Image 1 (cartoon, helix red, strand yellow):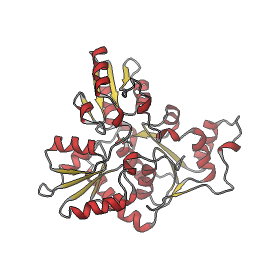
Image 2: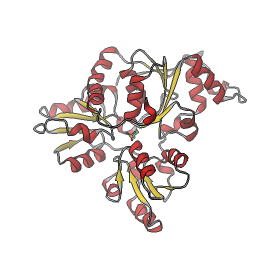
Image 3: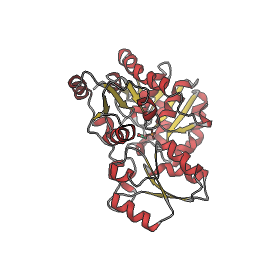
Image 4: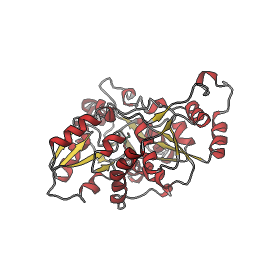
Amino acid sequence: MVETVVLPGREALSEDRLDPAIDLPGEIERLRRDRKAVILAHYYQDGEIQDLADFVGDSLDLSRKAAATDAEVIVFCGVRFMGEVAKIVSPGKTVLIPDAEAGCSLEESCRPEAFRRFREEHPDHLAVSYINCSAEVKALSDVIVTSSNAEAILAQLPTDRPVLFAPDRHLGGYLAKKTGRAMTLWPGSCIIHEQFSERELVKLRTRHPRALVAAHPECPEGILRHADHVGSTRAILDYVLESPAKEFIIATEPHIIHQMEKAAPDKTFIAAVGMDGSCDCARCPFMAKNTLEKIYLCLVNNAPRIELPEDLRRAALKPLQRMLDMSVSVNVPANAS
Ligand code: 13P
């Protein structure tokens, strides 16, 4: 794998040397202004990070935002592949990530060498890859999709070409069913969405008979079959805000409930749970690596910083740009300009 993160140097300020009395939000604000930085955050980030960000969104909205920003520095509060996407679409910007260890189980499940062999074994197939993969896997793909544009993009691909879908088998299975397309799936999954228990979901529904279920398509089929709505994080947020219902069970990483409670304080949001009956296992340990301290430190240290070899960046840009071009019909949220 190509290393895409430049770590802080030896002289860099470290967390253990931080003044415990520091006003972190105030200092981050000062650095954001001084460095002409924009802070982008995924809905799976802790509430305090979402509140501090200039823009909070799903993977597609964040990619669009990273491509369109005129800031000089992008601080990407999400996981590493999202920072890579920002660098691929905005090579002239400095892209900082608070924690270099913020990975993704889907990305990990799909090593570039193995993916290359997968492609070679299916030479007549189009390779459609979920954005949750490395820059190298992107570079080996024909087009990238997110959970919000995958259906719209599949509908634009020639129907006589079979599709390879990587790396999320649950999203791929959901799309194959929805579109009726034959798809060969890479056997990856998200450790978070994989944990939800169908039995516990049925129990929750019995206890909350009026609640509607909104689920992310990374969930296994056993969860999706109970869903009143399946969509990306932003689509789930839009759904609960637009629905006249008052109670919802949310089957995705529970930090998105922060935005729901802010926008609809009169509604009740219940996090779907795992086998143990708690939603703790649904908290993404990778997303949780980012903290206010680390956002401050990455701005001070100018690292961890995403840097990609130019040939890899260009190769990964092709299928990503195709995605952006093929998603124009997928709506842009009002606050994404
Ligand atoms: P969306 O942001 O497209 O909903 O996907 C969630 C996700 O997989 C984050 O890693």
